[in-house]
Image (cartoon, rainbow, N blue to C red):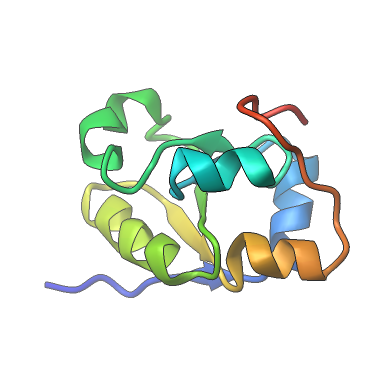
Amino acid sequence: MRVTNPEIDVDQLSEAVRAGAAIIDVREPSEYVVGHVPGAVLIPMGELPSRLAELDRYAAVYVVCASGNRSRTMTDFLRRAGFEAYSVTGGTGGWIRSRRAVVTGNEPRA
């Protein structure tokens, strides 16, 4: 059964970032280090199923990738697993195009 996949835009993500929301970046490490949303924690798409214990089941999770494709897939997966998850439309590319700050390197610094 497919779960409806809620999506948010980068403006809504920006509000979530300011509020300290849990942001998961499902891209590969080589993509993440080049630039990611402040506070986003790297959990590559292929690792997410085995790392669910790292996520708070009682808090919303915002899922971001490069453009929104991988995040939609992983948001669907998370919702089926019982998480309140949201995919970010446009992904990190949309975040950058909106001229918001990005973080480089391996740390999710805010």
